[in-house]
Image (cartoon, rainbow, N blue to C red; front, side, top):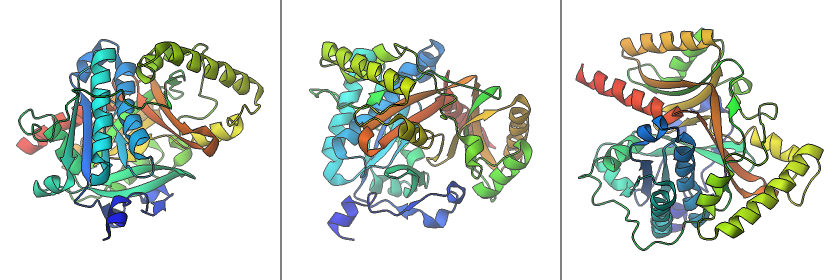
Length: 392
């Protein structure tokens, strides 16, 4: 494999557009050994959530992705958003730029958000030496917008390293003498997305036995009335009828404090002007500069990460009480049978954090998570079940 091909592994990777094929493991491609995992998560995120700060946690996790993609390039970097952190993959040539951007977010989180963000750069080769692997597919959301699907237990190993004070020492990223991270395009202006059916469920599912993920989700589909891998319409959350824009947005101060920490006055002016023009375009349906509201809302409903694989299947669903009960019973039975490990968290709304790099060229992605803990709380429950299973 040539150096150029290695560095451009992700940008040159063919994409797929039928999410029902996401569990086809034969189509995942191994990330080159010379690549690195940039791993970050918030220390004591559960405590921050308990104190009502999950939007702060969510925004900080999304900042990791925005900073690295703005520094390295959106086409080159696979990533997975985890609610209270993120995992990204970068080639060796981009390691310094990516690490510097991540270090800047660590410093900004501490100074502005009063949150401690752990961060590390872990070689993919080291993860393979520990028995894991990192294989990737590229899922097409809409033209020019992709999500990485990642399998192989490598991200789980990276997470374990990150949270082990001794193991992470050789890989830790220091926030000393760093510049402000580039967070252009990061925003949190939409109101929470309400549950229409009763419950927003943040769900993490991973096969533990011989039954493949597709078979497990077929069983889930039989119980709740639809298969989240197949029925795109039933899983979509960010449709225009659910989106509400409050003026001024409640999250505006948080956005300005993070994205414009180096020049708050300029940041406030910029965001206020953007909000005014957005409200006018949103109300009238007329185009303002590069912003075409009809096109944007059509793309926004597609460009969300409510379905993804980052070693495990991660979903954010809107379910009725009956569907939720059926889901819990189905997964509990599969867990007792040794077929699955799972974790879930239930709330009454979802949060959406946006990263808009180039609205004129339709380059924007939107991170969706359940409120009050979402995927980070589901992950904690998942790990508890995983630990219990390993002791049996």
